[in-house]
Image: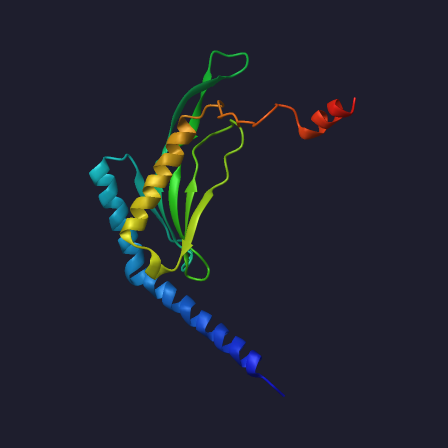
Length: 181
């Protein structure tokens, strides 16, 4: 009976389980604090109006959130048959560092949305990293991308660039029909 492949897979499995334990320890010992301090320093230096929210209700499934908060959207809904107006709230977006079940860290952008106005855009997953891969310069890059995405959301306009078509503006099939007639 040849168990070479099976032994290799068992060894790989044990290695992965060891990595998970190590990743979780890294998060607790160094990574969590490094993320928080980097975000705090960036907020202070750039004067960005944001809060850092720690979500630690579930051990080993924690999150650090750079939250731009909630604000009045500037829109108000008139309540029928009254002179009352209901304020519509805008959630301004967030950058999330989420500890995954396996100890790796998922970085994602939660887009702004206006309560009751369409469906919120799904979060954008920037990347998943092992704790030792996440460095300060990555966090700064994540913040830059986050602010770029949020700015684009705020400056939305439906004037999408037109695709340039080479040749005639008709599909090939309709051109073929013209040639046959």
